[in-house]
Length: 170
Image (cartoon, rainbow, N blue to C red):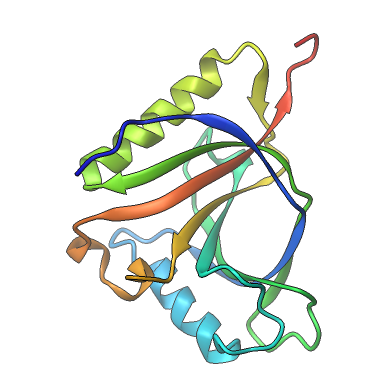
C-alpha cells in the first residue's frame, strides 16, 4: 500500500539526543551498525529516554546539495547525564520543519524524497535551513527497520522532518 505524498510544515519542540555518528555506505549498513552501537551504550530502558517509540536518523542539511556522507543515529533524552564512550550529544532547536511520511516500497521512498525537494525548490515561503540537522524518525514498533538489512526491507516507514526557515520577504 502506498500513501499519497503530502508535504506540510510542522512545528517541533526542541530536544536533546544521544547519538552515534556513522557514514553512508554502499550497502547502507552504516545506520544499522550505528543503531547496534547506540543500544549497546544506551539501553532502551534507560531512564533518560523520552517517550516516543522511534529512533532519529540525523542528516546535516548542508550535505543535501551534494552527497550525504555523515549521519547520526540517536534517541531523544531528557538530559545528557554521563555520556557513554562512542556517543555524541546533539541538540535540536526545534521550530518549523517540512515534513512528509514515507510508507511504501523503495520506489515510493525515492518518490517522497523527490516530492520533498521539489516542494522545497518551489516553495515561495520556505527554504531549507542548511545550518540545521534534518531528521528522519523511524518507529521502533511494530518493526524497527534498523535491525533489518536494507535490501530486505519491503515497506519503508519513517517521517522526514527537515528544518526550514521563512524566506526573506516571504
